[in-house]
Image (tube, rainbow, N blue to C red; front, side):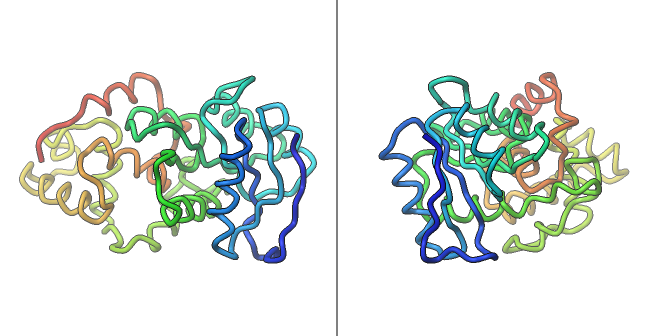
Length: 238
């Protein structure tokens, strides 16, 4: 059952987290990993989607960490419900693997991030922090606005031109299509893509598209099933 538990590190500045997962040991593990950093406090737990929705309705939360597989509803459906309610709540999904298409589906459902069960504690906390800081304001990328300040937290900030290339890449465009759209040469696009992959610490275009969603450069509300399929197929050599 969902409940509230305030720890000794709780403070007005701490990120208030609800963990939604059927398995008690997994919930305990997620709590322990998050609360290694005093910036997080797990204030509640839920064993299914119904409990999670009830907890969100009565608690003040910054982030809900949601298992992709819940006993009463899948995590994507719960994410859409949490994002479309009277009090939209930021969601970090976690699941069994790093399938890029699954990450894109998570972003399309409105999740601010996705982590695999095999992720390290440090990476979990990084993803949770980024998700909790996601901008839900009307001018944010989720509402069709400009890229938010989250880009400034990247180890190597993207240039304005690289952001343009990344958005087109995430839209499924090939290098030639990006070149035509931005009136630059394909070789210049190739160089930009190489820089983007390096700065985002990803291996290919599909992973870069996922990061574009996670960082808010691309609005999940504009994503269609056809676009997701197109992105997954777009693995042009750089």
